[in-house]
Every structure is written in C-alpha cells, then in structure tokens.
Image 1 (cartoon, rainbow over the protein chains, first blue to last red):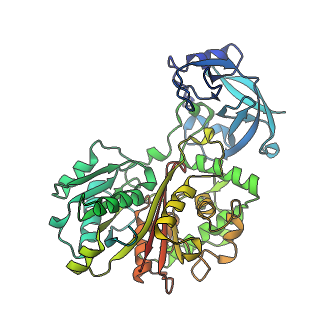
Image 2 (image 1 turned 30 degrees about the vertical axis):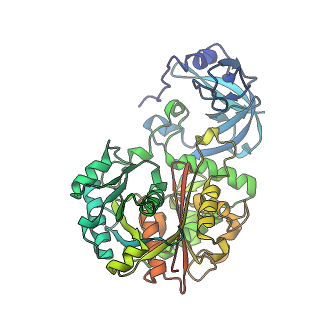
Image 3 (image 1 turned 120 degrees about the horizontal axis):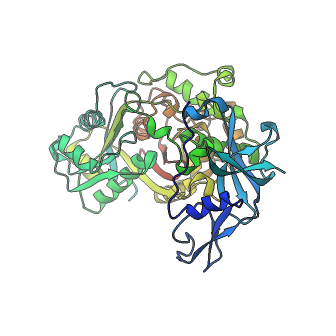
Length: 131
Length: 375
C-alpha cells in the first residue's frame, strides 16, 4: 500500500494547517481592501498589499462543482474509487479543493455544505458534508 | 496587418509512436518538411520559435533547437503557454516580421509523451493531492460538470464532439486513431473521471509539426507555391487555478477571439471551417460559445445533428483534432487550417475561404486564435 501524499507545511501555510489541527478552517484576508482568499499568499492578489492576516471561516459554504474519479492516478487512492473531489466556496468568499462526504447522487451545484475536519495519516484536512 | 504575413509552408511528422526519437529530432523533421513545403532553404531562416516540450521542461530549449537546426536566429526562443503556444508563437512571429525584426520564421512544436513519460499530465496538484486531486483530465471534468449543471449540457453533447472528431480522423490517412465512434460506443466507453469518459480525452502522441512564416511580398517574390495569408490573431488568459476561478464556465477565449476577429475584419458568421482545440470535448463546446458561434450555455445544442461534422454548417476539427488525429498540443490544428484554405484537406470543406484555429493551454488558462484566409 502506498501512502496518501500529504501537504508540505511551509512558513506560509503553517497557520492554515495549525488552524485545522485546532478545529477551524482559516482563510486569508487583506487588511487594506478586505479581499478574502485561499490558498495562502504573500500579497493580496487584488490590491497587492502585504497586510495579510489569517481569519477563522464559519465553515459554511456551497458546492461549486465536483468530479468522481473512477480510476486512481495514485496507488493510495486505488481502494477509494469511485471517490469525489469538489470545489467549495466558503460563505466568506474563499474557494478550495476538498472532498464532499455524502451520497454521490445527492450532490448538486449550489448545495449548502459545512466543514467536517477529518484525519488523513495524522493530518487534519478540511472536508465538507451536505447540509 | 491583415494578410501581410503568410504561412508559407507546413510540415509534420507521423503521429503516434516514435520510440528512440527525441523531441528535438521530431522538431527538426517537422521544420525540414515545412521548409520543403515552402520551397525555402534553411539558410533563409532568421527566426526560430519553439514550444517547450510539456513532458520534459528543458532550460534554454530555444537555443538547443537553433543549434540542432544549425541556425543563428535574430529573434525567437522557447514559449511556455502549454497548448496555446503554437498559435501564440505564430502571432508573435507575424508581428516580428511586420516590424522588420526578422524575415523568415520557423515556428515548431514536438514532444514524445507516448513512448516517453506522461507524468506531466497525471501529477498531483500540490497540497490538494491529499484529497486525491490528480491529473489534467479531472480539472477539465470539474469545468464540464459545472457546465452541465448550470446549462443542462448533456453527456450526449460531449459525445457529439468526440464523434465528429473521430469521423473526420477516420478519413484522414495521417490520423493516429482511425476508428469512428458511434453514440453507442461513446456511451459504453469507460468512465475516467466523471463526467469525462475515455473518449472525451485526447490521445497521447509522439510527434511534431512546424510552419514557415514570411511576408506576403517576399512569398510572391521567391515563388512560394501555396502561401496562406494570416488575417488575424489574438490571445487571452484566465490566470486562476480551477478552484479559484470566479466562474468555471467562462474563459478568456472570448478576449482572444474578439482580438483576432477585429484584426481580420470578420465575425463568426464568416468562418466556414474551424479547428478548435479539443484536449477534452468540453473545451470545444465552451470555445464555440466564447467565440460567439452560439450563446453562452448553448454549445451543447449547437453540436447536435451533425452541425460540426463535414457537411454540417460549421465543420470542426476536419483532420480529427487531438481526439483522433494526434494528441500533440495544437500545431496540427494550424496545419489543417492551412490545408483547408489550400483545398488539400482529406475532409475538404468545399469553397472554404476563411478558416479559424483555436489553441488552448493549461486548464483553459491560456488561449490563442488564428484566422487564415484565401484573400
């Protein structure tokens, strides 16, 4: 069995992963223009300010789109097919790649979802369940 | 600009498997064939533009290629835009010729992911690999799903694109895959990453293709046998990763097409044949919409009833495209666009006088448009 490829924690992304360990999903917010985004950046991609802070998200969002893998591109996922990967937009505006927990036949765009932090080889990762 | 620069020659290698051939060797073969087709000696070439090979990113590859061709170009280099590179490099070369920066330009692409490595298309997407987020097809599937849910686009619409390309490829002796695809075959084809099936995904191919550019004046003076004028070109970019893109179903293909149509002084209704980048079937539907051949969201119904097949209102990918001729990223669409104006395609659209080519790279990140004409 091959191991699931785990994220590489860097000084830039450490607050994100630490937040998940502490039970919250954080996004970045710009102190100058209030723009909100993920994943972690050094500057605001809208106004280019370096005044960037981390903030806890409500964990609520909606499903933008999803796919279902029927063949695994990595051996660690071979026994998970068919599995979904989804794009979720948080209520605050940031978007992220994730998995949605729940029956595939119930997935639909714009469906409300809520954060459910799960463990992946000791890593806390953000997944979502249908509301 | 309109028509002042021509595609003087086209050349391509066989498409499919080339074990023991490097991308450089395939580029050299394509360039030699393009020069021969233009009836131009290589010593006349003073510009060389090359796409970096996706399966093996080599630094300063433009110089590697120039050395292999025995050239000391005035201008050129390697271009990194994924599948949009061919049409983009042609646009840059045409501008350079018009500005007097060079006179005869070779523009070439080649790669060998079929017998080499296709790892570049299957890798995990950074930290998101922990979610099982891998590979190029899944990103296009994410866009396709949104399009289907938002606009009611059906699986059969994606299938109609694959069927058109496969029908055209079956009649192209140079195509890698010459097996037509019925609606039943498509529906039975293996799911790769839902909503994309195997037959929604382009081929993986070794091969190369190249074109020679020069001014229309020079082409006349040196007696180029079959020059094809470039009427317009344009580019556009959607520089967000898929997850961050505000709208998954819009792309900067619209910007690219508007620029090219304005330069050429034509619109969608003036196009008789189009080669639309078909790395995945969804790309063709969205390009038809973004180019204004139909309204946003109506790409699916547009391709019904054979409309994009030979004999239809707008034949698309008449050499088979990436789904049937070759998975090579884009230059083969340009060479087919040229053949349509010359009247030499294996699926010739009778009386074609204005021919359009779209190129696209990344996950619909980069886009480039060419309009060719018989003027």
